[in-house]
Length: 200
Image 1 (cartoon, one colour):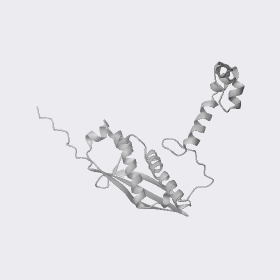
Image 2: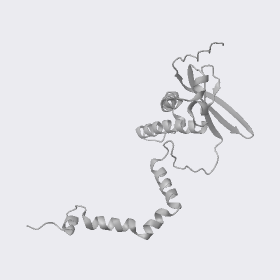
Image 3: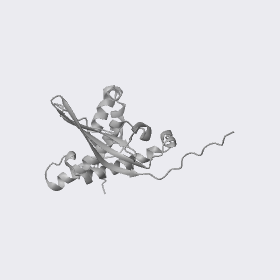
């Protein structure tokens, strides 16, 4: 009885394996050109760009969209308390307002893509209804609420509700118009204020 050789295995559709293949891989990684490529300063950049293009627009990564012209419309998000007083996003969650916007769209965009597949036509995230936008806002709060643990801002402030607001900005010639929109709200458990120290 004869044992199958590597050529017979390859012909049968079985990938070759064994010391010969392992040796080729070892020589490949030990080759000076391979090592020089891995040490080249552009290699990490190329690897990062390739990775981001694969994962696309998934926070905190980006597929680097490019724009040939500026849109007359833009928007930003901010957070308020139950009295609609603006709150410091950095102090609450430890992220910037621009990161807040990116996380929100990382929740909303997949919903638009799913609905586009169901409808058989492209549906932009900006075209989704208020219910979908509120769901994306709820998902945003779900992701960010664990970040509040241990932050000094919460020891000094005790809001009962967090509200997510979106402000749409439109440029018409030299004039700018702003329209504010409520997205969603998150009720917070009641917090007992710190006990006052007894006077000496």
